[in-house]
Amino acid sequence: MNKIPPCPICNEEFQNIFEAADHLLEENEEEFDPKLILPNGYSLMIGSLLRRIYELANYPEDVMKVCESTYGILYAAETNPGAMKNIIQDIVVDQNMANIDEELKNLINDTESGE
Image (tube, rainbow, N blue to C red; front, side, top):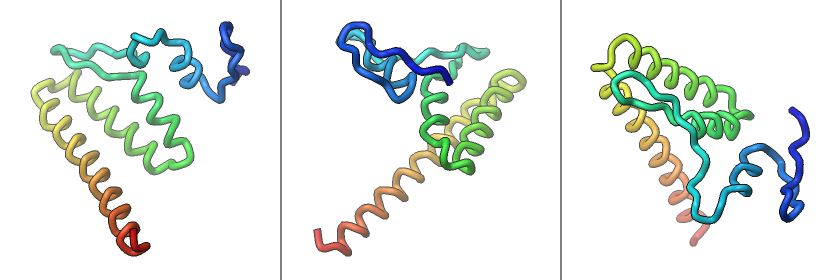
């Protein structure tokens, strides 16, 4: 990718476009997170999706899961919008379970280290 120019105001350098976009937002603005509008009023937060894939770049299996889930959502939105609710619930449950697994690991590590 091309080098990202420094901030025109403070001259700060950026490692990636996500840092640059976050830095250039006004203080009262929310994170830049464009969305892709899907059928029946659903939307895919494409900005968040791209950030997540970027963050997982060194974990190909996780990138594959995110891509597969996203593709499934897009397919369901186009072909069977009624199935969207179930798919989204499954993804949310899977994500929450992954977060719980990580929290449990941290708790066990803290307990073992005597904290």
